[in-house]
Length: 84
Image (cartoon, rainbow, N blue to C red):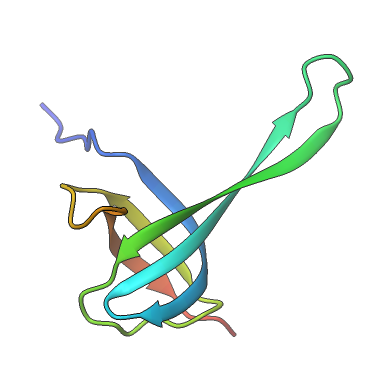
C-alpha cells in the first residue's frame, strides 16, 4: 500500500513577507469561460506559516494544509525555490 497525502498542496509566489513567521502567497490558475471559451487567470492569496522566516518576496514556495495555526493561517511551507 502506497502512502499518499490527503492534504491539499499548492505552489505560488510570495507576495509579502513582512509579518513574523507568516507569508502571503498568491496562487494563480487558468480558467476557461463556460460560454465563450476564453481563458483567463484567477488568483487566490493564502497566509502561510514559515517557521524559519527565510523566504522573501518573489520566491516560489510549495505549501500544504495543516491544522489551524491562527485565525487566518492553516497552511505550512514545504519547499521553496529562490528567485533568480
